[in-house]
Picture 1: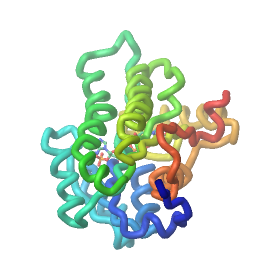
Picture 2 (picture 1 turned 30 degrees about the vertical axis):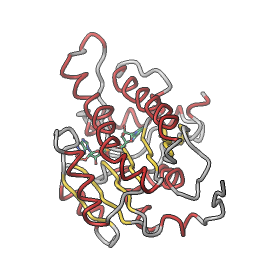
Picture 3 (picture 1 turned 180 degrees about the vertical axis):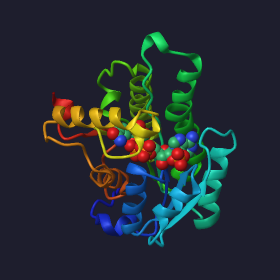
Picture 4 (picture 1 turned 45 degrees about the vertical axis):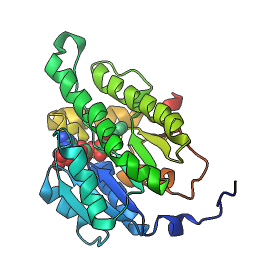
Length: 258
Ligand SMILES: NC(=O)c1ccc[n+]([C@@H]2O[C@H](COP(=O)([O-])OP(=O)(O)OC[C@H]3O[C@@H](n4cnc5c(N)ncnc54)[C@H](OP(=O)(O)O)[C@@H]3O)[C@@H](O)[C@H]2O)c1
């Protein structure tokens, strides 16, 4: 078998078609823009049309689709929106996710369902809908886990459990799809500037305290910027990354070492 291994990253993503979920803010916005800068056609998905429009502003390669990933029709309509427009799909970035504090004493069925439906079920069903196209393009999936996909998080066990599930989906799909030429990898970001903490419903003072505590625990001494995570999402997705699958890459300023 002859394998092309000499493609340059900037050339190989040009013209490819990428779906990024949660593209209206944070890591997803940075990833959508980074793929567009690399010459890809990007479909950015999220619920807020205004936030998505801001992501696409000034980036001709980004189209947007407002959709709730938990809606039953979402996987089909998202994949159709990309393939109807560009005729193919090369990369699925399962980035959208939510954080929720939920100590065991306050754990509810609704709380668990809410986290797992967005962090685990939605990316699974989107990947299923994307699969025929990814098999055709020999494309790839990049999932977004977290430091807490492989470390305990007291007070937010179900968030940690949902990201542990993402890491096992990544490894299992990597093996399952390797024969079809589809690579599956993940990034596991450490604490990164985004709307995640305020979206979890925490008051501003609590958010600031958590940010200070996190920065103090990170060996490189600060929280990450979305671009610092996005650049690795792009590298994992790049077809030039020909021989890497099933990896969960910690992008966390060294937090996983502590
Ligand atoms: N920031 C961190 O410190 C950190 C650390 C580790 C891992 N992560 C992971 O990184 C990923 C991105 O998070 P982020 O930090 O960039 O946070 P963020 O700014 O809150 O981004 C999450 C995005 O997901 C979208 N989203 C949420 N629910 C959705 C739904 N039901 N349907 C469609 N889109 C939905 C949100 O947009 P709408 O509200 O408009 O839908 C938002 O743009 C998440 O998986 C998160 O768990 C973040």
